[in-house]
Amino acid sequence: MNEVMSFFEEVKRVEIIVNHSYLEKTLRILDEVQVSGYTVIDDTAGKGDRGISCSDIGCAFSGSYVMTVCKDETQLSHLVEKINPILKKGGGVCLVTDAKWVRH
Figure 1 (tube, one colour):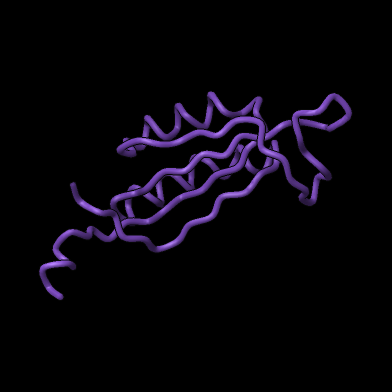
Figure 2 (spheres, rainbow, N blue to C red):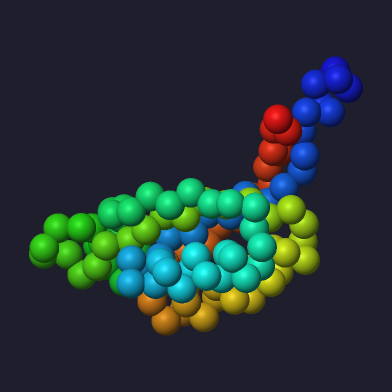
């Protein structure tokens, strides 16, 4: 069992959904806090406190989904501090969960 556990590294999984107009700023923040990488999925759809969002013409805005990991609490704190103003201004969500990164 210990052999299998040696393949894992404890990380914080961060999922961010932002208005597409804030995507570039969000990615600059990820670079500033030096996350190891990220995945972006454009044109997400959903419903939140600001209404429905989708990429269709009749919708208020389209969103982007960004997934990344933070290696420790310090990096996570910096990210949350910098991303929170974007979420307050443009809406969206930021979820943080404990995760295990498979070393390869």
